[in-house]
Length: 559
Image (cartoon, rainbow, N blue to C red; front, side):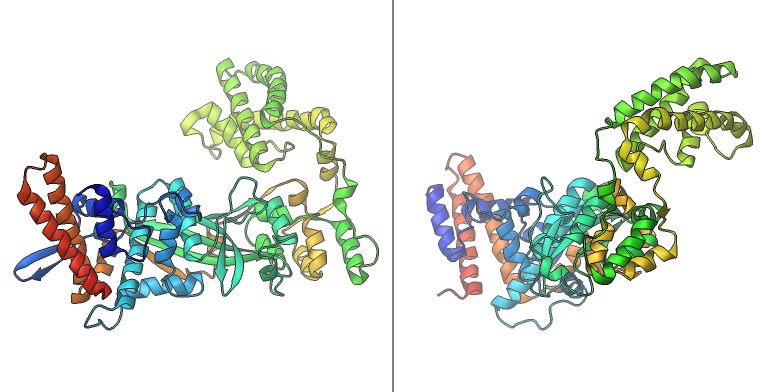
């Protein structure tokens, strides 16, 4: 019997309604079972011990690209379609309901066990087993970056949504989710416990809040959002330490909060210094916008239109090179004259230039060398290496005179060079700002109409300077309610625990199919590998296949 005949024969028995199941897929599943050495549970049956392994649970190939692809490939159902088939059986309408349903079954099982094969029961059990196993594999078998992409694709599929390609996307959303019949934009974060940080481009955030994508505009139009919003699902991984990544286990904590046109000022004002810098607003603009908002007559005030046009002032490395020229010509000679070695003096300049280039890349603000603490540490590090301590009195006596000179030279650099090439930046620096730390700023913003709030956002200092906002770990957890809305166990031992919950006669029959398929594959491999001479091997393999087919027909109630 050739491969095509085997395909047709097995298809008749195992998948009369599922075009995506072929001998290749069955053999792949069987080989996974044979290769596994991880025993999850065993059961005595007629004197023999049947062993179950984690690989007896169907495995959807883990692939961020495959899971993101809704189109069918040449071989039938795509990886995304196969994952959808399983995950659509996870009950619930939102993230919390679905995740709570999984964890509840992991704790308490699946209720009353049917006396005979029951399609609904088997479908439910297998779907939840696939969920736990696939999520475990997606997180533990990959590095942090790849695991994040897999996690995003998995949740998008779970929520019947779509991933949004990063390239060319005009939104900060990572994917959409179907929640209570509404298309909801989701920005997902996955970090190690204690290292959570939510943030990104403030310009992109404002664009999403001011003019929502038409796909989710109706959801964002809710009065609780004032016409624009983004849902954040932020997660932390809290895993046990292990030398073997595949043996890792722990939990993923899920937090949720919305950033909206209505709450963004208060949220960022209480989150961090970076957040407060983003919402900083012009005092004169605030007065003008409040007046316009009373009647909405005439043209709304627009601070951006009064500023010089954006011009190219050079890439970070170009500006850093210009500053380096100044420091080498003026700072190094003075440090050497004061008794510092030439090599140490050059090291100070190198550290400062690296800091400046990094600051421009991250903040897009060439008018700032770095924070005061960063500048101090850069100088101290150049002088003392790993022993640098900006609080040490002896070290301070050496680096503080250098710091004073650096401040003076950078101020001159801004006046003599940046002021000429960055007219817009100079104009922005001269505006009288109301900073985010002032309570009156949030009070003013919250007094505005939704339309005026959208205008206010596009005239903040953060938007005008293309800055970056940040909500650090503690503030993000507070925004998410202070405790996770779901805690999902991850790891092989938790898959084992769920398998223990389904140890019964009905599932025994289901898993016996995989046992016989494994035996059939083993014996047929031996038969063909030995030149079709070991007919006894072929007989045992055929009998195992026939028993698998009979059990499948029994479970599926096929006459």
